[in-house]
Image (cartoon, rainbow, N blue to C red; front, side):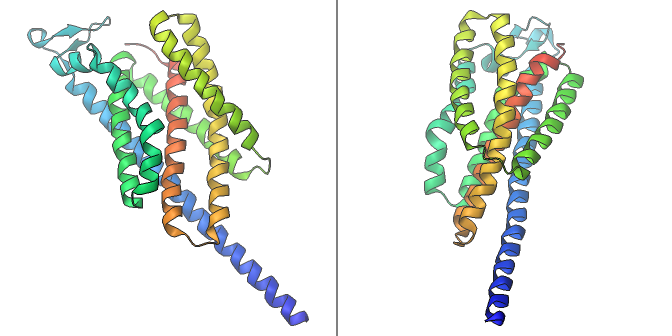
Length: 260
């Protein structure tokens, strides 16, 4: 009997160790995929902002308030109705396309979809390089990275159930999107300030919530050995953390960013 108990305890310990090791590898994949997505977004935004501007007054089609001259590409991206498509296309993909991709595509296809999405976000964010100084963009990115790291670590290590908070925060995101759309027409600085402050708090909370959800999802499915599902789940988790990081960065840039 004692030998049986020892064997059972040993087997349970071995399973627990295997899950812990697998969880570490899973989280590394999540953060690694997210980091590649952020790199793609940053490079795409920087490259497009350069391609959209000109120093030749004769080639300029439009000029921004800060004096930056736009060529034909820049005028199309930033000063034509196409800018609305660029702005809302990534949101439409998340709401209507990502779930279908998760269900039907292979893990490689889901990862490719994420990287294409990151490129599209780079296009929509490229204007920040025309509005804000490179120093303030770098400074805000570093502040966001430090805050994100602490919040994600909290979500990973806390024993508190964050699911209730997550439901409340996701409802807050919906309200935030509505407020942003309304302010596109009102152009109220006070409302934009309030949106930015609330947005930072909402996505800070979602960073911790999503990290805990990624961890819990892996633990719940690891024993079943569904590797295909777990690979897709890692990319889905990377997308959720990527969105949280990116939104915190954008809202913080409203506070910390210095304009050209």
